[in-house]
Image (cartoon, rainbow over all chains, first blue to last red; front, side):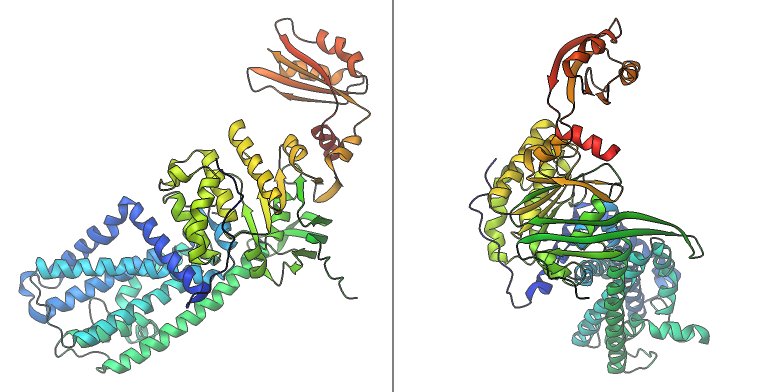
Length: 280
Length: 329
């Protein structure tokens, strides 16, 4: 055993992104390490997407489906996989600390909890990207889907923006889990309605009128529309204008973020008032 | 009336600290209010090693949680390094380190190195400093050779040493050690106590909670005894022991002593208190009495015929004897 003498004196960070950037990076890295440390990561990231794609393919016509419709299916399956991972992973981003016994250590950090959660949620949503990429790979290799996009640049922009909107939504769900230990019930029960409402598998326009306001309030609805407009030739969407979809997506994503940060403040105040946040 | 400013020589200043827990019914009505802290006052001077001792449920953890900004008080004030725990929480958190007892507070599926890098970023340690400080800390706590191993493979003692390294990662001025030796074997506990001494030598202020009275006596300059949410005594271990100078302690080490024997001892005249550890093969029994050696023959004759005394000594009362009197009064 050594001695605690002669340690390098501590010094606070002064980097370009400052402490917040450092925390986001650290949380992304730690969440990734924890994710890959568990061999079960293969189930949500490889096995589940494979099943999603198979079900979608056979449900919508099997061998009869071809051309851009196959790409429509693959994109839809990818987004379903991405959303499924987001809802489970992101909403548990901080809830995980409860059963891991690290909640006190996390709450004791000299930074608002929202920045820690943001880093964790970013990686958890990225797990969804792994999932979506795998579905795309299955589509390209197994079902020989042609991957010719209308505009690769706009497709990339819409995909990244949808990724960010899912992260923002995941952050919002994270507060639900923290505010109530029964929050998992709410977030889990949202999985299927959101699949339907965001139009991952079929156009939102065929939904009953009463369901449309809910669909319109979900940022991924607009992200999926923008992705399809930039990928599928002749696609007729809700708005049929890529930039309108992107603008609504951006506004709703910012609204989710703002609401999530406000709710995180409340969660921290609640935690300090009751001291029960670490109880599992 | 304005609140007096905290003394700059105090690392911790607590005035009238009160905390109530309210239990509510399903419909939101108040069903029970429990007072965990009942207006406690104490100060810890900069550079001091201060002990907070008390039975389970006495209010130690609640006090630590309020002082580390994890819980809000119902009434009273608490200042850490001159900062208000209600208003300056992030600045306080930057300047304090916390060691949680038990298995809490580490990510077991990743390595010690990963844990320390993560917490150094969380505490905003400059990455260039962290690159040299983390290996130095791992060496200091004797984990350098196993830094890349997953924490789940560590022994309890190794995890506790990692907790110490984690608490020191940002070079805090004040450390809160919440039962840091709980559940450790004697060697592991000794290592932790040596580290606590090292931290004290470096000029850190330390607030230690412990269940082990000899540990508080050995390490702490002053000790506060907390019972039922109130501080019932606060002094140096030597002064606290003066509260029981009217008694001596007969300490027996035996084979085959039973709970019945302990009950018989409690019935003897002039026996103030009997503390017994009967779980192991060799039992330790401490009998507090104002008669000292004069009671020894009665203590020995009460022993069951099949039991055997290995060792018997008449001792001066310890901090534990003083503590037991204080919390039972």
